[in-house]
Length: 192
Image (cartoon, rainbow, N blue to C red):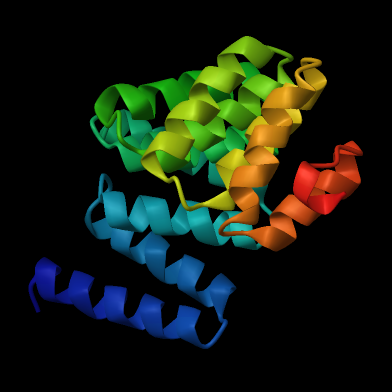
């Protein structure tokens, strides 16, 4: 059996194990795949995600970092790495990873959102506003960027900007608009 055929059989086995919730066994299969092809991006990324799902965040982060070294031109890998760094509270490094993703793909809306969240955590609210505005331009019907942007405006003592966002959200996400009103204490003219 050729190495390629063995690899494909291992890949299908890993997928099947994941479908049935057998993460630990799937992890072993990914190790076998990497023994065949040490720099395989699919096996490395899968191993990192399974490690994260199993709660092994340090190992997951190491695998994802290796993936960015092996495939430095992948915006998705940089985003995933930044996401994991953010989860671990490594905000400066997460911001760097998100910016790497955006350098490779300026239209990667989730990286703009992730960068916005990290900048909020770092207290760099002006930069967060810029990142979240770009996210909302790329995904105008997603409430997540709008929600965070409204929260930042409140933190920056700009309630009128937050009210504009609440009114906008009311048009397509009334539950999120109502949640923002409750959390911020801001009332829009329509809710009075």
